[in-house]
Length: 420
Image (cartoon, rainbow, N blue to C red; front, side, top):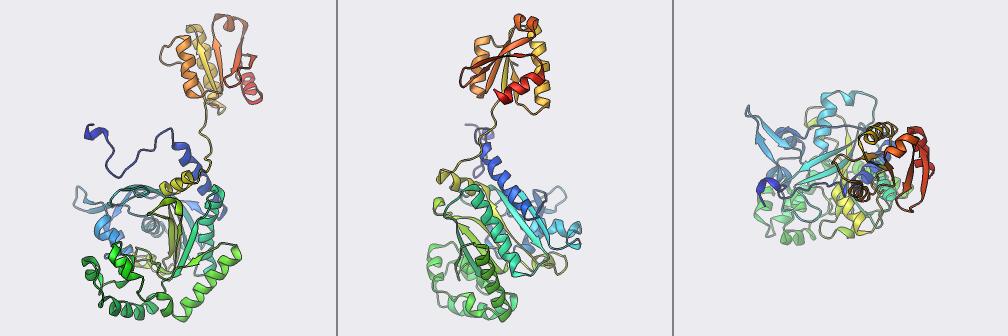
């Protein structure tokens, strides 16, 4: 097959036969986000590279190995978004959204681009649903954003979503912890990348994907033993709020996120239905991000939810998606005069929200009815000279075969489509 007729490796076409699955998850995620007071934001597909270097962190796998970065025609470095949070934060600063009533609650859908080895549940372009909240330090906000994600899974019917939480503390209490990590790792045989990161950012070693490093990490010191008083109190209050909200969780003291902007609470939702790539929603608090990229001292928290992985979980669990919309009425016209009437009737029905079709390919009656079957039309109607003369036609239920005569008026046909 020619290269130009194949999608690039690690990307997927979302085809008409499956798009109803996307409509289902987008409808539910939007409804849940809006019930929490979140408003939608849409940001560009690409940003200035420095936004991600400063926001995500120069020593992360995302920045060092996975970003799609290029120079534009004026030599400026541009990067396709590897995640949604930094772009949303940049937009909030640029347009003064953080100067409005706080907390500011946003949600978005976006494509994210990462150069990784493609496999099930991991694409080089994937779709993400994200929520961001700015301007609150209350632990209850951490619990609420986690509860929002959990509500999505409940509404979709997902079973067994496993929530893991941890606190990675603030900059102050991480200082002593980093010293302990460096001392520990200096006694280990780590991969070359981990050795390069050891002095600059030892927390990144905990997120290494190398199998031998992951085994070593099981014995590494845990951050929760080094939390300062304020961070310990905050984490305790988050757990208490989750219990009040009825959201079950497991503490994982070795959980860190692969992006440098996180502080305090971090979390992941996992599912055994996904295999190796078992995380399908992750996030946490990032109180220094807004200031780091040029805004004020505005705190933030949120999450990203991979929609491809969400759909894989639903499919693996045999969950129902809202069915794709079916054609309401197919009108088969037998001659030019009938076609004129069909054109007007179809237009009027479409204006009232019905999916109405007629022949655009010059087919005979038999071929038209076969096409109506392929469309999954609920009803059909045949128009010829007799129908035009009498001003009425037979409406046929394509499932039951039942027939009913109806006047060739849009309002009459509409009522019959609803009641029949």
